[in-house]
Structures are given as structure tokens and as C-alpha cells.
Image 1 (cartoon, helix red, strand yellow):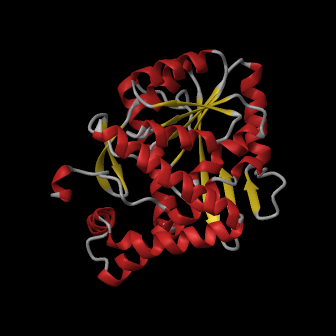
Image 2: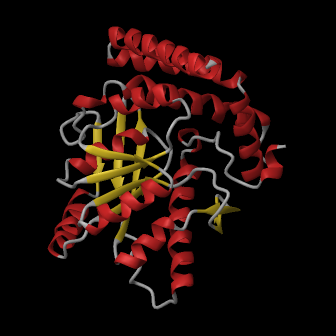
Length: 298
């Protein structure tokens, strides 16, 4: 009973805050939210976790550099929050502040796969503004399903889904989500995943140069159904801008390997891709996950 009351109270506060941001307008909302997150974030437990992750990945990094990356990470997260509630009218192909790279390539790949009756698995990370990914994929005339981590507060989860892309079907991760994703792909539709979160299962693959559990689902689905896997980088730029980049596909059929080695190859390529993005712009990745071994966070 007490938990339910607290959940509804938390949802009510979030709703009021969202209404306040909507009154401010998009650009003011982004600026205010980034300021708020930048001021509060560094004093939270999550910031301590981010600091531990940075120290683990780069043992020689200075405290000053860690603080700088963390503050800019909070700044980016605040911008994402402030921008999120205004994305319904967002068209990345028409927005003057958005540049899309690799468009001819991805259009050609989509055409090729549609002829075969196949969808594509897109992946990205909690990098830049990850919420804009479905918008560009939908603009390519693909039926898209997104897998997301459901909030423990069902009221807040419903509020978040209200503001997500209406042209994308969202399902929470887990056994039910996995079954729905499989059936969705069987129909020749496409899937979008963020695959940089903390896991307690999978296989160990280097991520940012450190061994990390990595989920095998994306590789297993691609191999089983002979699907292309496409990396999509969502980089935030200056003046409320974004760069969206489609990278060359990772194909399960391009290597003569047994099943186990194919899975390892795909996951290694995925983690290499994500790591390269993060190393170049570390402030745009969400460092607050428990991504590596438990002993780091004790």
C-alpha cells in the first residue's frame, strides 16, 4: 500500500515537471533540464558509479578528467530528458539540425532485404540521444519493434511510453519480449535494441577493453534467421543538433564458423563498434550502469 502511494506520488511529481517543461518550450526545456541534471547529478550515488566505471576503463585517468566527463554526461542526459517530450513532431530527414549519414547504403540494404521478406536488427547504445533512433528507422518505411527496460514504477513506465514514438511498437525486455521479438522478425519486420546495459548472463566479450557479460540474443536471432545487423550511431552535436550514422552491416553469414564462434564474432564486432563511439565521445555515453564485474562497485 505504502509502495503504491509512493509510486503514484513519484509519477505525479514527474507529470507536473513535464507540464512545466512543455510550458517552457523545446529549447528552454532542453537548457533547463541540462542545467538541473548538471547541478544535481554529480551529488548522486549514480555519479559515484560512473566514476568507478571511468577509473576501471582508464586506470590512469585524472580525477579532473573524470569530473569533467561526468558533468558533461549529466548535461547530455538532461538534454535528452528536456527533448524527449517534444519528439512526437520530430522528422530527422527534414530537421535542419539533424544530419543523417549512410542513407543511400541503408536504403539499398532495406530494399535488398524486403525482396527476401526479411527485416533488419538495428542496434545502438545509451549514447547521444538514443530515443531518436526509432524516428529515423520509421522514416525508412520499416515496421519497427523496440525492446526497452521497463520501469519498476508502472505509473512512470506508462507516462514514459506515452511520449515515445507512436510508430514504433515497444515491448519490455524479458521472456515475453523475446518471444514477441522473434515472432515480429518472423513476419519480416525489423527490431531495434540498446545493448550496452548491465547483465548477469551471456558470454564474456571485451567492452571498452575490459571483459564484460554480453547478451547473446541479438547474435542468436541473426544467425537463426539469417538477418543483417546494422549499427546506428546517435551523436548529439552543438545547437540542439544530432548526427545519425548507419554503419556497414554485421552479417552472420559472412564467416565460415561454427555456431558458437559466429556468436562470439558478432558480439565482438558489436562491442568494438560501441567502444569506438564511446572512446571518441565519452561524455555522451551513460556511464551509470553496473556494466562490469560486481567487485568494482563494492
